[in-house]
Image 1 (cartoon, helix red, strand yellow):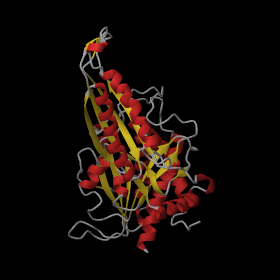
Image 2 (image 1 turned 90 degrees about the horizontal axis):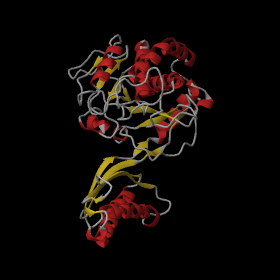
Image 3 (image 1 turned 180 degrees about the vertical axis):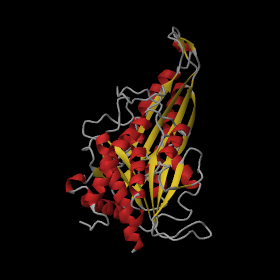
Image 4 (image 1 turned 90 degrees about the vertical axis):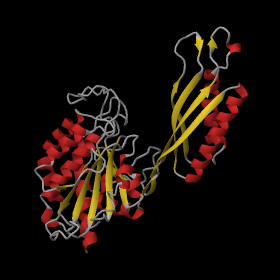
Length: 409
């Protein structure tokens, strides 16, 4: 167990003093969910909530982000570039919501119809705000700086990639490590886990249009039925995993939307389907991509139909630095106790745009337990478990302090 740079009991006492406030912050943010790149009310609320801290806010990178630097009291005066020197650690929370109608029944449920924080980003924001407020009062304890990133558009749009492409991690002070957390149903509330190496999958998207010839439902022999053809395509795509990839290779092909026809007695001209693929290995992606079009082409040709196939690369695999995962393990055991660490959590086929941060800077995307009985992420019943907030603030604060303490030596 490491020797903590700040007394864990002192940290716990300070966190518990602000815990009621941060819980209300979380519930307030939960009420105002906004989807990708529309998080204007959310980002304004964040700015209001951190206005009483010593954070130095930066100009937005992509519009609705909030990014700032908290300088330790041991940092020097700014040089010509504005940097005060010393190491930096970067902490990130995502801030966008999902286009889902909430059914949690909570008194703090979404006030924005058709949008909900069903992935727990309200909890992530609240934890990072709590971490900032805590560390603002401990600036005399660390050297260097902590970058706080409240990032838009994690869902679907890849806000993380946009911000990295705009230079978030390249400007001074360049981080020595990056960390983010995600609430995770299925493990005990407040427990911490992280998978070394490849931890979350790459995510690509595809669309397939099956082009037939419409006609009357009573005389299907005079039509080229795109619905029957599309059904065969859906089944054929599933054989790629079982017959074109090695059995031990991880890969997913899911058709998630399918649209065709407008009435019960008319065969439509076309059917459009969209979906996602997941993988860890680039070679698996290459097989999936090429075989998908071969399957679609062959099935459509046999039916006399035409097709259009579009495949778009999305998020890259999320790869945790093994050394930083081991560092996280020692931090968790020192600050939260032995039982708080969950070992051997398997990788997830979910995708996450923090992968673009980790592709440039070593760090960890850690999972924060929300309870074994928590509703699943992206479900209408989901609500972030407030019992996990204390552990979240503890681990993010400790990671920042211990990283800076080690880097400054």
